[in-house]
Each structure stands twice: as structure tokens, then as C-alpha cells.
Image (cartoon, rainbow over all chains, first blue to last red; front, side, top):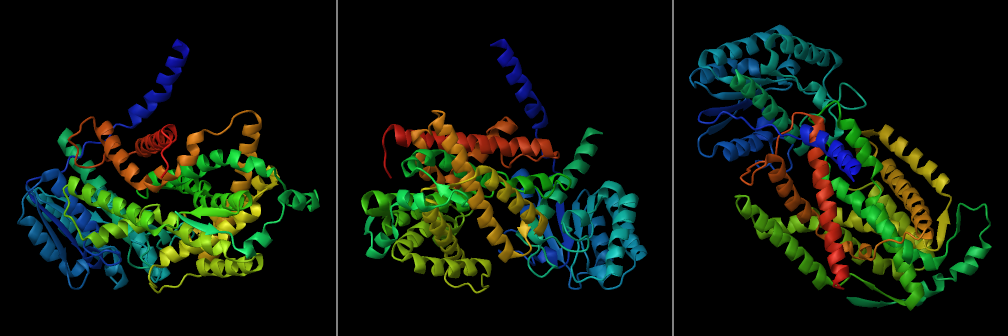
Length: 224
Length: 354
């Protein structure tokens, strides 16, 4: 009997130890921004406005923080970070201890922006975030089927260099979205059908990745 | 329940299986199987198909764990015999009933299906209110009941069954071919409800195969090889579990489902021969199957409270590691399966017939 009990304890104990959930430590009481282009507007989702990633993020903050947080989506007309970086930086700088998710996954490089230009834009954002004590997460690139090999190479280079330069404040997304069969394709389960915009599952993945990175950042600050 | 008399056309199809079996040469792909044992072994098959579909509903593919998600994709494709098996066993039982009594009962009673849809829709509305959400339109809840639960399998069964019984063997073959083409090359137009039509078509094809498999068996090693080949081909043609070539995937899925069905049939028969008969409540699993989605939702709430150690939980736990996530979803799978078996046992114990 005791041998069986010991076996049961051995069987159950690893599951219990690994199963300990992470307490969601989300900063409440401030301003939360989601900046971006068409993805922020929910392009690709089957039920617009209810399942896109900013809506999921908004619901998450609402549940955790109640009415203590102001949530704002901001999608610019051009959909390019280089056109809007000054306005975004100014807005973040004016909102102390805010949270900002910046999601421009392919439009800049598609329009011909260089990797150095993008890194400079990220640097401007990070400086504004540091000045206002805000938590900023800049999202990485996403595969688009129609992009040329040269543009894809720039996307991958940007991911490498930005990860090295900005650490946890940069969220490399490319490998999460690339196809099993081809590095340069958006994977079918996350594709809304045009090889460009992501579907409901893709928005769910974005939400989980941004949320996870936010918790990692705020948890590490909390521990310190 | 509506009572469908067996049309003459069907009667002419129903030859004596034993005499037919005697004519089948021993080297044939399918060999005769004692029809009296079909009903006995069906319980084990129902448990297998029920568990397979429950696994699909409780263990999603975690795209956020980029290095481990492939394991879950493979596991999901390995267990992907439940829907085909559900209709195969429906076809086998249909043939058994036709042979036994000359008439069959199908869940074609529109009133019962409507009541089931209303109950599922009511659950959706209550759950939305309980979690503090805004109550949407009744239409949305009915959409949930029809398309996001297992109810549509019963709707497909209710339509495909009578159609199958009304056709001759020759007509069944050609209708089956048309249905197969329809599910291989689905149109984009939203004609009434393409999902339901596709499920009815899949149901018809699989039930027609199931009718042919009644009183027959295959070499389990051969079926294991067929299932393994179909699995490997599917895995190599997909993109993280989603088919790239839909038409090929549908055919492979049916081949895989049939091979697994015949493999499980041999295993179930071997178990029964060793005096391990399936539990009687397995025949009542269709009820927890019908309410599987509500069961999973309730169990997820319970598992969330268990993992957080508190009833005051607003969100499911967030896991940074794959093992933690896996433990959580397998807990939901385990509790949901146990709860389903208890429901079936309860119905059997008190002889409640739905």
C-alpha cells in the first residue's frame, strides 16, 4: 500500500510543481495604449471588434484592473511607424507610468524603409518610454506571402538587431507566425486567407504573446 | 422519435451476412466478423471515439509555445478519428438495427433537436451573464448551439440516416461519391449553412462505409500500417495541423478514420474475448457527447479555481512554461472525461432514456 502511495506521490508531485500558475501582475491605474496599423483595426478577424487582439487586451485589463485603467487604441492612416513615431513618442512622454504596445508588423519595410531607419524609430520610442517611466513593448515582424525575398531578409535582420538592442522591450514575432513548410510564408492556421492579415487565432496569439511579455517585464520590476 | 420503415430497396440490399461472408475469399482485405458480436464490442469503440473528440475540445494547439506546439499538433492528428468513427459506428448500428427488426429509429425528431438546441443556447446565455458579459441576441446563442457544439453531428445523423435508408446500394454509392466531392471541394458561398451541409455529407459517406463494414473485419496489422501511412502523409502535407491541400486531406482523414475504426474493432474484440466486456453505460455516452462543450466550459472554470487556489478568479491562469500549460489542459481533459462517464453511468444506472 505504502509503495503504491509513494508511486502516486511521485506521479502527482511533478505535475503539481510545474503547474503553478504565474500570477498576472499587470500595472493598473494608468493609461494603456495600443499603437499600430491595420491589425489594430481588426483586419482579418471574422468578428470585428470582438476578437481582435486590442479588444482581447482591453478585456484582460478590464478584468484585472476594473475601472482603474484607461485603454486607448490608435491606428494611424498610413499604418507606418516611421510616419507616426514622433506623435507616439510625444503621447507616451506625456503619460507617466503608462503601458504602450507598438505593433507595426510589415508595412514600413514593405514601403522600403531600411533596417537602420526602423531601429532609429524604436530608439526614439524607447527614450520617450524611459523618460516617462512607461512600459513599452515594440512588436516584431510578421511573414507576408507577397513580400519579396529581399524584404523578408530585411525583416529577419531587423528582428535580430532589434532583439539584441532592446532586449525584453522588443518582442520578436516572426518565428511564431512563419509556416511549417516555408520560412517566408504566413502559417495557414493563422492566415485570414490573403497571406497578409492574421485571423482570429493569430489575434489570440498576438494577445497572449504581448500579455506574456508585459507580465515578464512587470514581474521582473516587481521582484527588484 | 420518428419510426422509419425499411424501404424495399434497403431490404433488397440486406443480404445474409454470414452467407455473404462465406463467399469472401480468405485473402480479401475484409473478412467476415460475427455480427452477433458487433453490439457487444460497440461500447469500447464509443469510449474511444468519445475520448478522441473530447481531447480535441480540451487540448488546443498552443501557438505561443513555439518549440513545443508541434507535439500537440501531432497528438491532435493522431487522435483525429473521432468524427469519422462516430458516423462509422452509426452506420454499423443502422445496419444492425435494419437486420434485427426491419425498422430503425433515428434522432430525426425535429422537436428533440430543437429542445437540445434551446438548452445549449440557454446555457450559453447563462454562462455569458455569469461571467459578467453582455447578453447578445438569442440568434447568436442559437448559432453557438448549432455550430460550436456537437449538436450538428446529431443533425447530420438525422438527415444522412434516412437518406441512406431510402437508397439502393448503387444509388448510395453515387450519392456517396457526390457527397465526397462536395466535402473535398467546398464552395465559398454561404448557402444556408455550409458547415451543416458538409457535416451531413461527411456523415453520409462515413455511414455508408459503416453499413458496409457491418459484419466485417480486417487484419489489425494491415490497418495499423494503413493508419500509420495516412498519418505520416497528413502530417507531411499540413501546416501546423491545418491542411494545405484540403481535398487530399479529406480523403486521408476518412482513410485514417476507417483504418483506426477497424483496428479498434479488432482490439475491442480481443478485449471481449478475454472477458473484458465494455461497461453498459458506454451506450449512453451520446448524452455527455451532446453536452460536451458545456461540460468543458464548466470544468475549465473548476480547473482554473483549482490551479489558482481561489474561487475569486477572473481569468484562466497564465503559464510561461509548456509543462505547466499541459498539466492544466490535461487536468481539464481528465475531469471532463470523468464527469462525462459519471453522467453516462447515471443515465444507465437509473435507466433514463433520452
